[in-house]
Image (cartoon, rainbow, N blue to C red):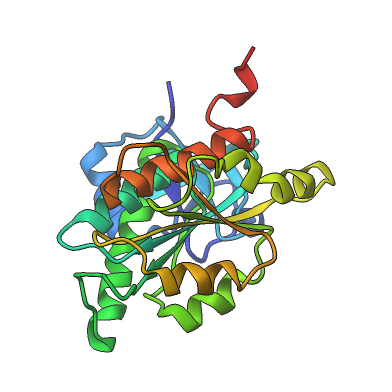
Length: 265
């Protein structure tokens, strides 16, 4: 049975000198702990501000604050690859759906992309609050799914900013409905596989367009910003943006050795 999991923003448990100490949960996480109705004697998993992973026993409560003792050090599941999802801004709650489910899969980073055909438009005043909301969703999804790495959500980027950000990745995969059927994901990841084989954690960006898809000039610009950028096809079906935003990173993680890939015959 998996343990309830919490992330600490500032507290480093290795620095605690007392056997029992208060756990510095955020206000929302303290509410979550209350909803779970945790009792003294129960155990929880904690990822602290140093990204260290512990099992802790709740000894008591000081109001809503758990007083805990470290029961042991846990081994975090290593990442198969560092995957960043570049998701074209989508209307309604589609962005929240994508961020929630892609976090559960193991996506490490999100870049909302203000594409030319995005129906959703976010001005500078709303960008910060939207990003804060998306980051909270990513954190909640990581807690629920037992991910030990908390995904980072950027503020929405325009094409010029995105091109600069994508230059540092080992591979960039552009999912485009107009890509030829021979544009295979496995081939596009060749450079990232070589990087992983050399002992480095491969960094892969997956680009998915908004409801109206990516414009030709956007595809050309993204392909030109990284020597290892390639367009790929996700099959003969034209997927909704919120479907592609979940399926594409799942396929990348699988090809890189995650998502049960190690169990293939």
